[in-house]
Length: 112
Length: 115
Image 1 (cartoon, rainbow over the protein chains, first blue to last red):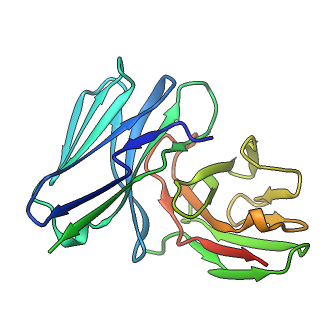
Image 2: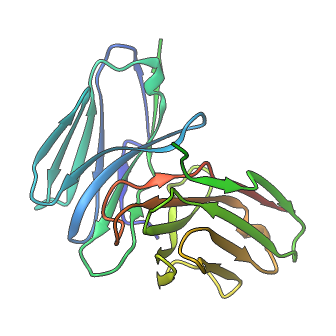
């Protein structure tokens, strides 16, 4: 079973609006990553935030991490039609193993 | 530079057939992962290699699934006696460092359909 849970499952917005996706997980982690998947480019890494970081920015992306709540959020500002994709959070549990655990994803649709 | 490649891109198998899926990671990448992704779901971890050593195979769903990476580069995922529930996209990913706690580079996947 998957550890991460994304919320919402699907999101439809207009171009130019901001999109916020949330992720919750269950165990202690080393880091949390966000990936994007669309039919054209497959799964692509977006950003990694370490367990001792609270916020990170990369271009139009802003990620927050709250380890006390075991949750993260991904904010995409000024969305574009090209941002239409599925977004997954992925965690590396701090249990000594080698798994990366993906959530079920948020499907984002940006209308032009 | 070349990314992760997988072959075949599509595979149709009759139930009971054996299949072999190939992954060519980025040259020099130590870590290699296999994932199974069902329609509408996120990737599910299957197994992990560090060089040629299979250090974690806890995600393999049954003993019909077998993976190898004999020379620490190319990897093969083999599924014996395929069942309909094996239909999914099989993704391979590699990272430069060990343990994979870094950015993973994914291949395009192999879409397996078992009839």
